Image (cartoon, protein in one colour):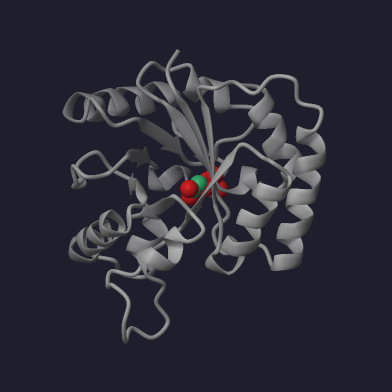
Length: 223
Ligand code: PGA
């Protein structure tokens, strides 16, 4: 059975109080879960401000989840006001998202920035979830997961056609046979299986659908 990755991207959502409530709710639901498939990897990419408490909740509630950040400084530690570097993330998380289309578009991240970020993540020992919105975009060979997220599907409620997502994932898979391909963009409990049933898609990246603990838990139990 292939490994499946369910990645939550909370984006710029949740205060510490809301994070506490999310974990308390999901821990309650997880208590009664009978089946925790070993091939299922659950990664929560949370805001920097709640990395610490998320790690604490996962340990204290004994949840089988991993933590990631949504960004990383392109620089090491030092005089880079406002930046969070790889070793600071590594204290709390194992993964980092690099190249999300919101960062490319709204924060003007260039291929050069992304290369620097990939390098910093590698130096820190973080696993990289690398996002592309188009198969023509450059993919560094050092990444651990590739997330294909077409712009038209992100946050719009209009998921991509699963057959088209599969065709593009198959092409990427040919170029990077060792790296799992994830689909992202308006995935919900209603459509998730249309993507996970495809042979070249090994998981999903969930934005909106990860914000409510009950919805997120429902998705986990369907796999
Ligand atoms: P969405 O976000 O699920 O809300 O469309 C996905 C993403 O941007 O990673």
